[in-house]
Amino acid sequence: MHLQVFTALALFGVAAANVTGASGPPRELRWAGDPEGGAPFVQADSADLTRLVGFDVEIASLIARGLERTPRFVFIAFASIDQSVERGDADIGLSGVEDTPARRAAMCPTIPYYEFREVLTVRDRDAARLRTLADLAGRRVATLGGTIAYELLLNAERRYGLHAVSYEDDVHPFRDLLLGRVDAVLLDNVLAERRRLAMAGMRVQPGTVAVGHYVGVLACRDEALRAAINETLRAAMRDGSLERIFRRWDVWNEDQPRLYARLLAGEPVPAVSGIDEPIGVATLTRWEATRRYLPSLVRAAGVTLLLSCLSMTVAVCLGVLIASGRIYGTAPVRLTLTGYVELMRGTPILLQLFVIYYGFAAAIRLPAFAAALAGLALNYAAYESEIYRGALESIPVGQLEAARTLGLSERQVLTYVRGPQAFRLALAPMTNDFVALLKDSSLVSVLTVMELTKQTQVFATNLESWVIPGSLCAAIYLMMSLPLAGAARRLERRWKAPTR
View 1: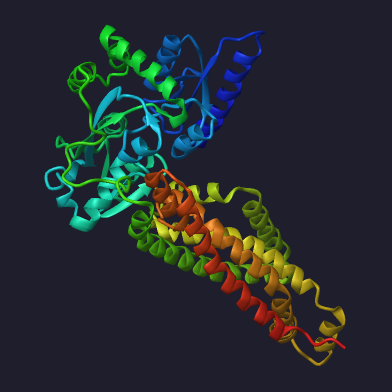
View 2: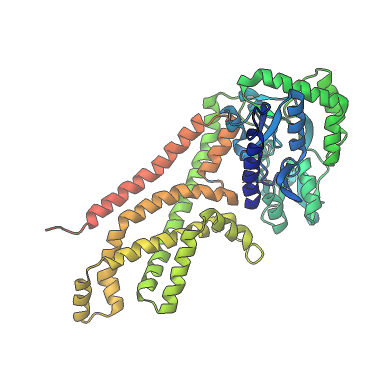
């Protein structure tokens, strides 16, 4: 998955060079997309990694031709497409972007160019008994965060008691379904059918949970550009250009002619249909939406605090053992522990989390929370060991020799003389690391742990604004970190060695 991201960055650089190198280049249409798990929307061509393919790539080219512009791809993470378009990083977002009430209220989406159905995917052995959301009561159902499907699952969570699990991409939900970590996946039929063909052992249920549409998304200030794009899309509906694109990608079906007929006749098309209760918070005021999400933010903050406390406790214990082993151990022990410290400090924590959760899944299938705890603890243990090792080595040699002269063994010297003083010296930097870990816990959302930052992102996506969610998130983090820092300072003053 990370290879796709790096490929996308390279593609963006190549595209930029192509359109800016010539003198007097034609006007560009900058379109944003995310190739990470982006098939069949946007993806790197397996035969030529220097080019992008996908039906949204072709639609971007179609729109650019209609506007007499040159298309230029801009790599934007899927969850940030709206915000990046709003701030001017791109003219339009095209990457399987869904038409939602919130998007209509805050942005300027184009007319729909494809109609999809939200469907359930289950394991083959569960197909006869898990047909609807009601059948999944008490079970874990996965989807992509910040989508219509996620909002549908939140409604179903309140109604049926199932557990919604949010993922950062649309590949790992299906892998975890086959591994048994979740019991079903709710996503649009385009992705569900594509994954079913690529992964054996899954079945897409025929029932439709809801009906939605793919659109291009523009900033509200670009109303004139949207009108021109809409005319281009209508022309492509009339002359069959869109149909030919979707047939090439094997996603054309009988839903599309009905959609195009309605659009060409001027009939309004709802953002989401086929459901009996509204989704999202677009129809609520900002403060009503905040009241709705605040309990979820508080629960997510509890997960963040619990995970951070447990991880730091384990990290400190392991760090003390590693530091002691590097000072008192034999040469092979010291070499092994040094290698561990350098490995954990020299590789990204995000990579370590992926390896623990997904890489080791064939041997041991850790629950998401346990994998997150192990990843954070093992990573921070390396840093805590260096802090404690430095503190141990800072104890004056005269004290150690005096203790040995009194007949104390090396273990007693460490336990009664060297260790306590070292811990006192290490307390301040350990506290700083605890606050850092509290914030780094936001990375565990990639393992489906719904911590504070991830829940804030979901809130902001559905509200189409980061002002209130971001302020609340910052306030909660401060409420958690400031008392911890204050308690550490009090301990530091209490344990501070007297000066003469």
